[in-house]
Image (cartoon, rainbow, N blue to C red; front, side, top):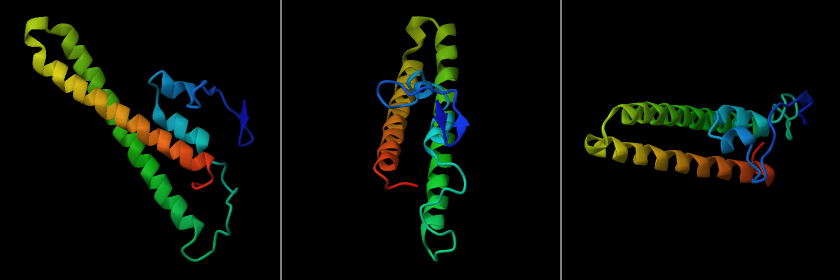
Length: 125
């Protein structure tokens, strides 16, 4: 698949999300898929308070989302490792923490979906 003039190794899944997200992969790769190539702005770069400021804030939002995603995934992996070492009787608290992290990841997935809808509708970038 060619995207933004580059060969893209990521496929889109049937749901419209990049396949790496659907498999629980790195979210930053998915956000790179929806960000346009440099120099393809839809407004002049020097317009006062215009598109450049929005792009900067959008990029900051995306970077924050990537950081939160990576933190949550790492916490989930760590909890799953601890759960695999614990006997089932003493793992109640760990299971609750793992469920909380899982729900946080689902919330982050919904946020990615919202960004994707904004991008596809032309409200972002």
